[in-house]
Length: 192
Image (cartoon, rainbow, N blue to C red; front, side, top):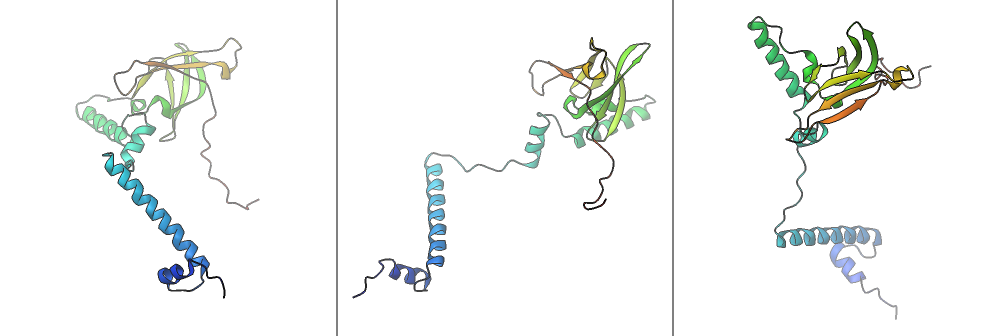
């Protein structure tokens, strides 16, 4: 008498196909996964927890901007304030006030009669600004442009004071000159 596989009857009953180990293995992996999912859901329900919700796009955007409004929101508000000021005969807010300190790259420095200034590249729009100490950003201000003792541009410290989005203390942010991202169109792959 031949020894019979004890699971062959189960395989036949569950799948309706005698001896098909590939389908049986797939079924068992799925059944085990389902059982684990049900067990996890039951455990969470017993502990009074709900499953983790997927963060919304606004929540992800707030994390990237440190709790500050998204650039689109700040830009729209800047345009509105600019229009209101124009209607009242005033110049309105400077364009730099719509950017966060973290959205700015220092791409160079210059010297004028007033002292040193910096070239700031705003990543959200690709705009470059020529600024001096005292310029205001959405969440901070430029406080100093201090050349290094070596005289090299790379050693110049550009110092910002940045506010936190909550009631936390201001923090000092020191940036150095770095190249601006390339705005030239990329050549297609395979082009010589």
